[in-house]
Picture 1 (cartoon, rainbow, N blue to C red):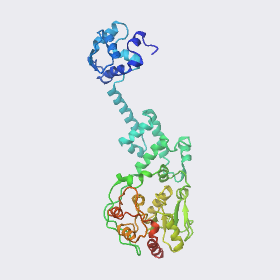
Picture 2 (spheres, rainbow, N blue to C red; picture 1 turned 120 degrees about the vertical axis):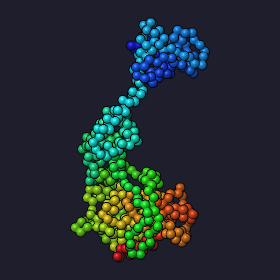
Picture 3 (cartoon, rainbow, N blue to C red; picture 1 turned 180 degrees about the vertical axis):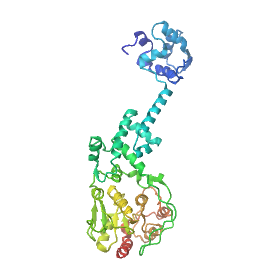
Picture 4 (cartoon, rainbow, N blue to C red; picture 1 turned 180 degrees about the horizontal axis):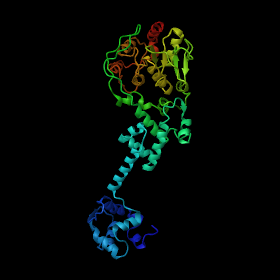
Length: 441
């Protein structure tokens, strides 16, 4: 404001007239490029705003609901007074250049399109085809195309090193970005890399149709249910609980690598490999081990039973020891180590069979485990629940909201009808029969 003509500042400047100037600027912002606005009608004016327009136009103030302004006449009065060449020039002197909104939007869209075109990594290029992803990039770059280009270059350098094969996140960040904290949670580059990695994973939904379970000794017949294609139901199967370190783990990057190791029993490795656990004794496999020195699991076409609760592993070890079939525990909703182990076992050809608690969190966990690892239910259907509920001597009521079981459409309705939660440990004797039979075979 220091270089504004004092007469102009007295006439149209000041904070009290900011709203009026904003309305006048909007006329030029919306006008076609090169066009000269003609008549303008303004309503809902304050008294001081009506007085200002009266001074500008040379007309007496009127207490009218609206005032019509001849912009060409107003421009002429400003020129004749030697204050400014036009109202537009006067407004720009006070508040800065007026930008044509449509032209500015077109220029911004062109700039952002050019940003996307510079991306060379296929995961990023594919991600940026999604409108939501472009919005994410704009927010991360604080709506600066130049900053977005820098962010994409940084993300490409990180993605170019993935999968990393057990590299610590801080080391990856130091080697690619020059900052060991550049990929910490909440950093813009980390957010973009994780979004691109999730997008490129694009895990297909479970197949529809009857479940065909592998034939195993003394196991119940498969359920004739269907697995609906419902990737949009991520909020029901635990995907919303996925933490960044779990995604990093799938990309071979270690974050908090010793937290929540995977509990297992009698999990065999191929000949010549170092055993992960002693026969009959529960053991833990850390995320560090699974990613840095992944064992070659000897589980092809072999039943690998998966449970939710560590107590079942302890019971199986006590009762069956080395004769127990292979048993892996998710310990509730699987964390990075558990998810990595299940994916490795599925990739090695294991026939994963899952059992958990008959309660709503248990159904949520099961939905997630079956969807992400390809596991099939293990005594975890409607008939199994009803048998356990009918024999239950305790009254542990179901709590929280109902969640549909993706593998058995009638299970959740049956659970709601009985209203009972059945802990996995309560059916341990039945599960041990399967573990004994499969282990002996």
